[in-house]
Length: 306
Image (cartoon, rainbow, N blue to C red):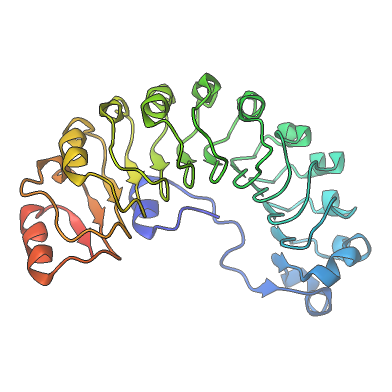
C-alpha cells in the first residue's frame, strides 16, 4: 500500500503500516482456531460470504483484504470490526460502500483501486482517522467531485490516482492541506505544466510519484515545487536527464530522486543539480562500472543506489 522505497520512508515521512508485520490468515477455518491472534485477514473469495457469520469473533482484526473477487457490494458485518485500520477491496466491481462502515472509527487506509467508483463514497467522510485513499484504476472517477469530497477528509495525507487518464489537476487539489504524498503514475497525457503549477499550492506535499508516464521533457514549472522532498520518475525511458539536472538546482528541498528503469547509461558531466540529494536511486538502468564510479565521485554526500 505504501510507497515501495524504504529509503524514502526512512528519510522523508512517517508511514502507517497497518498489520503488515502480523501473520496473514487467508481463511476462516485457519483464523477461527486462534481468533484472538488474527490481525491480518486476506480472505480467499470463497470465504467472503462467511464474514457476516464469523467476523464478530475476530476482535483484534486490523487489516482486512477482500480483493479480486468481482464483488458488487461488501458483505454485511464489516462495520462491526471496530479495530480495523486497513480495508483493501481492490480489483472488484464496487460502486459504493455501505453506511455501516461509519462505525470504523480506527480506519486509516482505504484501498479502492480498480473498482467502479465515480466519486468518494460518502461514508468515508465520517471517518476522522482516514489518512490514505487509493482510487487508482477507477476509470469512471469524477476527479473534480472526488477532490471536493477529499478536501473534507481532515487527516488525508496519502492519495493514489494512478491510471486514471488524468490530463489536468483541478484547482481543488490545493484544499488538501495535509496531503504529503501523491501518486500520479500511469497518466501519460498529464499536462506537467498545469500539474506542477497546481501542486505548488499544496502546502505540505512532500513526495510526488510520476512513474510510467512517458515523460520526455520536464517543464521549468517543476521549480515551483519548493516544498517537495521526494520525486519518483521511474520507467520514463525517454526523459531528458540534462534538463532535469539543471532544473533541480532550483528545487532546493528535494532530498530523494528515483530514476529506476529508465534505460540510462550516462548522467550529465556536471551533476550540480543532484548535489543536494540524500538519495539517488538509479537501479535497473545500464550504467557501466566506470560511470557508476564517476557518479559516486561527483556526489560524495549522496547515497547513490545502482
